[in-house]
Length: 312
Image (cartoon, rainbow, N blue to C red; front, top):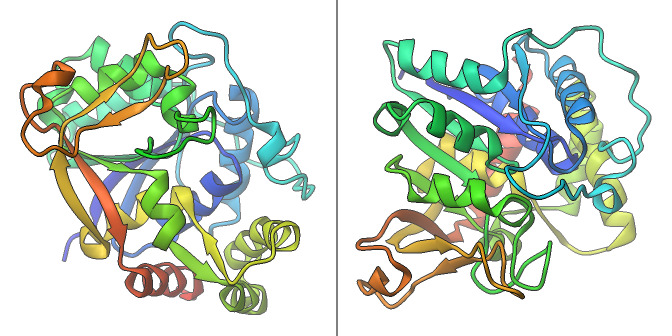
């Protein structure tokens, strides 16, 4: 079976690093490039971190820097969650390689438009780069094969009470992408926290594996376990990669989803209409987003662990 051609758009970030390693190690994906965006950390740091992660993956993939800030508001970073260096302050040395000269938005447009094969996007950061690409080249709406996004929630947020970080840090970009005709899947916080998990014993296995990528994943997860001891660890950004690898890893439903861009207390919220067919109340005439409802826990765990632990 031919490998799925993908571009990974990311803002590493601890869980972004885990997602990148999952994508780069997967035999099902052909990662054409990594595009970085300002989000968890400023762009210079997320680009540096993408290069660091790539060099620990055993793969060589070009890295392209993109948007330095959200479309309208100042950037709100997340050093409190990811450390001052964005990789948990583990102390990784600077990368040997350099980023490409081409801007991430131009790389996305060129690759999707010129490719003879379908190109899929996986977003595990703010949607700024993808929104800019859509605005610059409208043909992307018809040419992007699919978009798997770790974005949004329907019951709780982590940036605010109701806004998930990737959606809420740049609501205008999220709105552009959600209104586009690209076939898209929203991997929300709710099912990820519930069932997109691995176990504490799995982290032991990663530590014992000894490969650079397994060691990196374990080093990034271990502090979470020490800070919040629990039997299962939720893998937010890797969940979006897992869906790109195997859509059947989760149950989905096509639903109307809108991005709140003006609410005083709800700006950045992903408003999911579960009323089945009445999305016109959101200004959406039809269901527009595949929403992940729940992950098959053991299938997800097996996909993740088999991919990380594979030696070749």
